[in-house]
Length: 88
Image 1 (cartoon, rainbow, N blue to C red):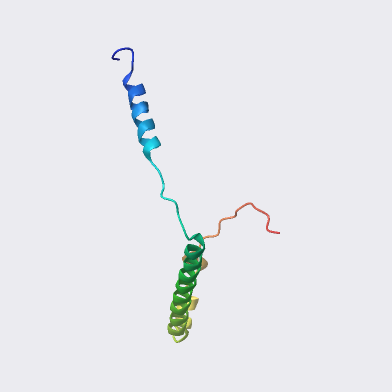
Image 2: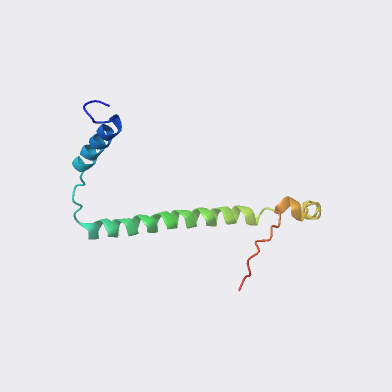
């Protein structure tokens, strides 16, 4: 403690000074930004949809056979855990 001021209060003062100097540049053309976001989202959805369609085409031709189906138990696929919630 120097001159009746603790280190902690000095740190708080420095943080307050730093925070008070921070500012954000005003955003202009919000409508344009929103339109572009919608277009980007639409493009990404289309890319994802196309990717899923290609994967589905590849999987349609895949048939592991009955041998693997009958040798698979439910425990291999997933474990059932009751949630305790009533589904309406």
